[in-house]
Image (cartoon, rainbow, N blue to C red):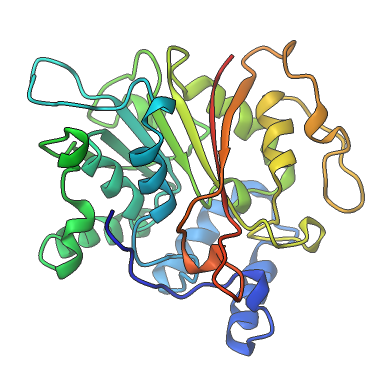
Length: 306
């Protein structure tokens, strides 16, 4: 498995560093008390100013590891793509930024929608796509031949609102009739204010192929107190479990920013509920997902329709 280059992070464990603390505070100040409808504009402004401390400088090692080592979790995963009559499975990266993970999924054989609300970020993604082809680390994005993938999938960079349908219908792939076979979320859930989480869960459920589709969440930041605000907001496994198990439902929170019903919530009676199929501690992750001793804090959860 290719090794990802180190990248600057602003994880909460490093908050004592003055420069990183300033970056974090700027994000909090910009989004604090602002209406959610204004958030896309704020993100685009940050991209225009090249203020992107969340960018990791390369694809997710944890995603690469899970796709490579836990093939049993992905019934729709590409295997041998020598049969050109067989349509490629479709993947989505919401809030794709510079597109590192969209390019990684293409290397795994998926046709990928790299979606972001910021036009500026997608210009960066297109430039990044051209850049990595000529760099020493381009093997990060080479077809995963050891998995039977001989040619990369296509990547379509799409500007749009994750919660709307225009980007699906106007993207160039046409309407994805059965939903996406894989959706990857790293820094999307944690960037949304708590009031947007019910809608997030409903949208994920609606977009995911009910026949073997998989939502992969790299849960981060797990070491940050959810009550301290965001973005990024601190998250926990219970937050994902509660919301994805109750898509579209308003859930009660306590004063510590945690869902009261927690991880023991009964998900069986909620229409569209997603079931957590696995929760994995990856061997490697971005520096932001490790403690000061280099131990991985991040977890990767894999979800499917019940």
